[in-house]
Length: 305
Image (cartoon, rainbow, N blue to C red):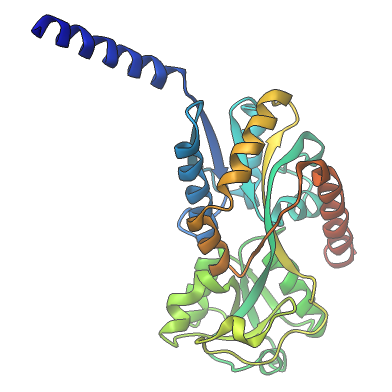
């Protein structure tokens, strides 16, 4: 009897090892602050995807730098088993820069997560956006040239040409700089600045998008939005290389589509004030083309004058 049990254990162990070996790892790279809520959302999606099937193991890894282009180009170097999660900066940086960027012609979305995430301008010194812009030489921190925060800062600079734009590694770094008085204000996402907002160390002095004030309930907030930025919101998606085999692309799309509506993922979207999309994969090409054109037009007006 003992021999049979040992054989059974050996067979079970061998079967589990074979299954583990057979599962292919799919890496979702993230090119910004790995501690951000956006990165946490990707981890929630990956965790749920791993529970829902046994063919792939999804992991999230950090490849920061160059406004997300390092992460994106990593996908092109590993097209069969690597994806990149990005916000609208995915479209902005290639339109704004000429070196060290990724080629949008070489990608396709494998999951359109959602959109409408507003940007917030936070400050320790000032109570509303007009007060900031009325200063002789105000300064604002952003998460780098070619980012969505850069776009908002340049819109504000149109209102005050003396506005000084200061680059940081990420929005959190810019917010900390505003807290420390190194800059007068910073562009961030509400959730990433929430600990400092909750402690009332900084306040929201302006925000983008069309939002109900109740969306910011409990936060120190000027009730003043920023004019002319109703559509300036972050949209999130996960992208694959065009070289990924079609069958694998379709499989991964179905897996991630199920996981993006998991309880933890939805809760993370809510924290970012993101509206999850129900866009079908057949509409992805149109979405991609529209996003690309929209951000290209903004970049052309603000950066490539």
